[in-house]
Length: 108
Image (cartoon, rainbow, N blue to C red; front, top):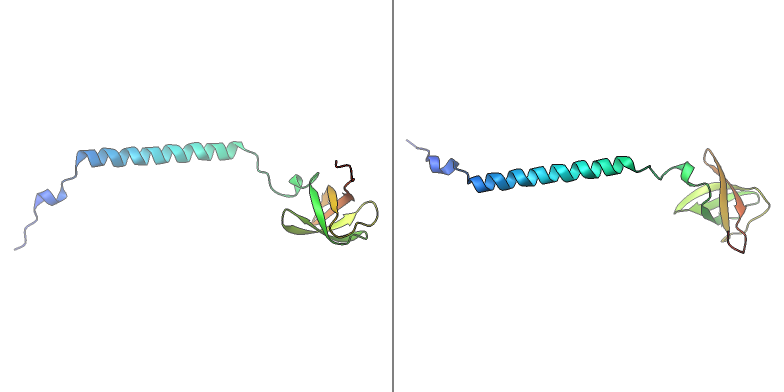
């Protein structure tokens, strides 16, 4: 009959200590990074768009389309026509529409 040798099941104590230390370090790092992530305010969504600069993709007369950080948004010019390629400043967000004004040449 087949016999099991007990030496097959022996584990080096140093290996156990190293595994426990690695697991503890991983958990500590995960907890620290999780706490840091919760302390920072999320910088996403439409609240963050007000005051940003966008580039006109489809002429605003007064309604058109602008690019903001790689996304296309429907925009309404609050002061006249704005040509394609010009920059505008976002003043207000209403649903999925942005209300914009043409960026001054002097650079605001």
